[in-house]
Structures are given as C-alpha cells and as structure tokens.
Image 1: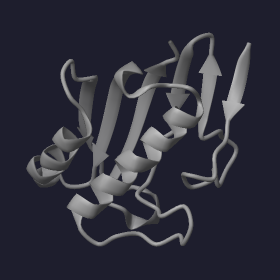
Image 2 (image 1 turned 90 degrees about the vertical axis):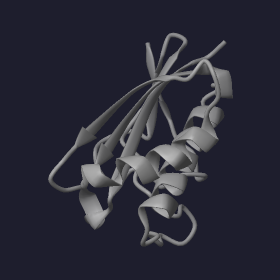
Image 3 (image 1 turned 45 degrees about the vertical axis):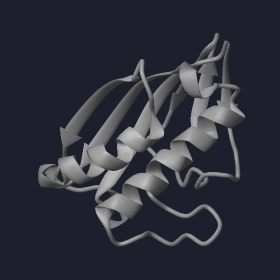
Image 4 (image 1 turned 30 degrees about the vertical axis):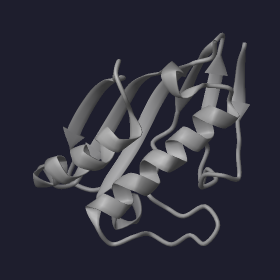
Length: 125
C-alpha cells in the first residue's frame, strides 16, 4: 500500500504528483524546489536556495515520520555544476556521519528558473 504525504511546511505539489509517498517504511520525496512555503519567494543565491530546498525536503520527511538519521539517500540537481562547492558547504551543515548516500546531477534547467532541486529517500524507524 502507498500513501501520499502532504504538509504545509513545504511547497504544495503544483501538478499530478505528491510531495512524498510512503511505501512500507520507506518515504520517497518529489524533487523539492527552494520555494518559501508561506510566501512563494525564491532566494537569489545558490547558498540560500540550497538551504531552503534542503529545509523543504527535511520538513516533508519529518512530517512523514522520518527522523534525521533515517534519511538514507539524497539527489541534488544543479543547473550550474560550478555551484557544487557552494552547495556542498551548505549541505554539510545539514547532515552528519554516517552521511546519506548522495548523487549530484547537472541539468540544463529547473522549474521556476531555480538553481537547485533536491529529492530524498528516508526510512521510518
């Protein structure tokens, strides 16, 4: 059985998808943009966008019942791979060892013209 996750602590889905789904004890998030869930504002810098995208993903996972140590995989999408170092510094502030597995992919564009999108997989313990 698969259940949808929905929280107002992250941007609401704007299409035919869920913010996340729970399948068994696993939670899979959609790609989360750096959009302020209350105002719709998007920060200008990669550092601020990284902070907000990670906060949005973590809010969804938390509301689904995933604890911080239960985040097992993160995928980061960047429109400019040269932003990797700046993103990585902010990312390192959000996680500790053992770090989640991570992939980082350079893409040509993202919705709303943002610089970053983040998705994750978590385990409910």
